[in-house]
Length: 123
Picture 1: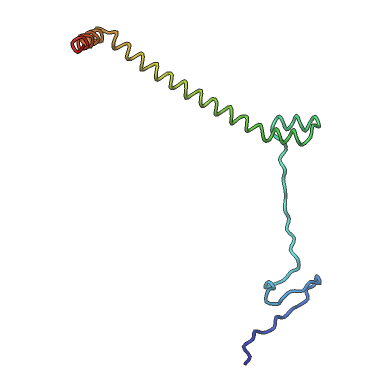
Picture 2: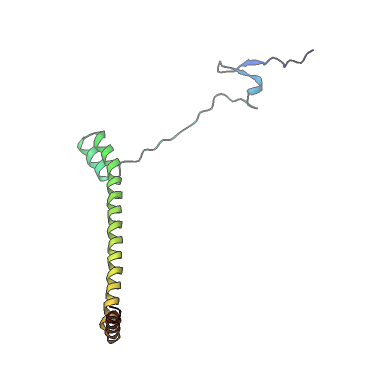
């Protein structure tokens, strides 16, 4: 009839706190001290430097941090669109040049003459 678990044993530690004996580490050496080093990088953007140097405040710093990369990405997207349009114009120009060059040769003139004769026969 003794199927109940044993009651938990509580001990008092040297620092005055209580702990269960089954949860104690193998060797208890007192509370542990964790050293955490937090490093903060200095502002590295020009807008931040200007805002912090002139005493404008956190709003200007936040605007520089947020809108600076946003402006750069928008300008990059616009430049990519212009580059694509320039490439497309170059390819279309090359195609028109090739067609005009082939029609302007003696072979092209003969082909245009044959097309004209074929249209006259149909109509």
